Length: 367
Length: 265
Ligand SMILES: Nc1ncnc2c1ncn2[C@@H]1O[C@H](COP(=O)(O)OP(=O)(O)OP(=O)(O)O)[C@@H](O)[C@H]1O
Ligand SMILES: [Mg+2]
Image 1 (cartoon, each protein chain N blue to C red):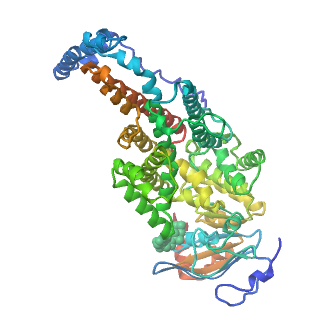
Image 2 (cartoon, rainbow over the protein chains, first blue to last red):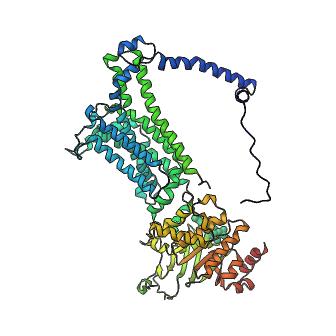
Image 3 (cartoon, rainbow over the protein chains, first blue to last red):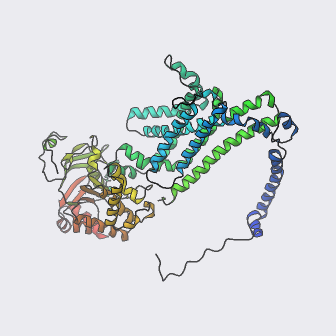
């Protein structure tokens, strides 16, 4: 659309200003704002340098308990000494490469999501996320593919946190989608089942669900049939979060205009084709913030498996703190700071990723 | 077209209706209620292949409901609707196959906003009609050219004007090679300058021999292409006549009143 008669467009006025101008404009626009700036600066001066001292300058980076007691800062020597345990739990040292390989598989599946628009991308993503748990379980547990079996009670630390979190996320989404669809179903039996399921699991704390899974469930199992404790916990986490997810997804389904259902129906699509190709892609897109909220909650809730005797990252750090050869106040603080940082890094990357996803999915598609 | 005469023996009323072998749509004694509200009353309508029917009438007279019954977006409680000789009812097993014979264009376009124009056009071809992707895309581009927007295939619906969106919607419906096209007020959500581009496409389609049932108040369009105008009021078909006859000399007071209101502005 080049019209020779229209004058050339005006250039946007320059927004580049000098540093002094910037300071005056943003930090001291009037006396009230200026006062706030000064208070905040004073708070920063009081807190940041001591924090840096504690975290880095005064910290004990190597050695044993005595070095830590001598140092006035954090005790990273403790984290250093227990690093292997924090990451791999009680997984046999000679088999740790299997854990590494599993984590690599996980990273690869996530990388698939970053693919540019290619044909069949939806199927590639779905396929890789169906394959992921199978491959990882085969690697971690061993057995069928000729690897030595590592029973799940030897799993622990960051690796167990990842296992519980990823299984919870991968399980919760399809369960949530099915429950949300079922709750809107025309068939009363399905609808009542889904409503009951959602309301039941939503109204109970996750701890209760985990207890039920680990203590009660075996009582109802048929004689001679036993299920792995970790597996039971994973199922509990997936079902619980599936119920939460269902309500998030239902919100998205309700936001889809009736015309979309009608257009799909009129073109000859049946219920499932309509849902898979027209409704769910739009519904899930609108609820990405809610989905990520649930996902972050899943990551943080993995710490609760401690109460049924599984040692996730936090659990194993706590166990390390309590061991007699590392009893010291700075060890306790450092351990919790380290565990906290681990969870923060996981959740923060997840939320960054979701922001990236939202931006990517929105380009050019607003109505 | 194959005929299965034994299919026609039973209809919901149990009465036997002789099927005119030429009808592509045949509606007999159609009645529909929304709760207690009798929205369609004793509708009888037949459409032969290649015919263009324009349905008009005041707001709330049941035009949309009638046209949506033809592909069973709405279910009816009494009467029989046959498409190409086959009775259509929402409870039937292969309803999707029958729906695929009927293309529909909506007032609000109802394009899929998360898919590109090309994907909008190939979706039903690939997943309902099992057309190979390459062929589906070829066909999509062919129909985009026919609605005069060959260069918008990669855009998303939100990036197009209303008139362009409606033409994409027409192309989308045509892609699956329907035998009948239904239009429910295709131009009434459009700005005046865009109405013409959509009507032009519809006129071309009519001239190529497509069977069309259009709910529209575009009287110029009706004059130009319609074989019959069906005037509805209060859930009934009040008049059914050739366009010139209906416009020059409506037989009912309600028809006259309606025409005076439509033609006034
Ligand atoms: N889902 C529904 N439930 C109850 N009543 C409905 C429903 N849909 C439509 N109606 C009523 O049925 C009547 C016919 O509606 P319909 O949409 O067929 O009218 P129309 O002739 O297409 O009108 P317009 O020109 O405004 O589109 C109206 O009185 C409307 O209020
Ligand atoms: Mg209408």
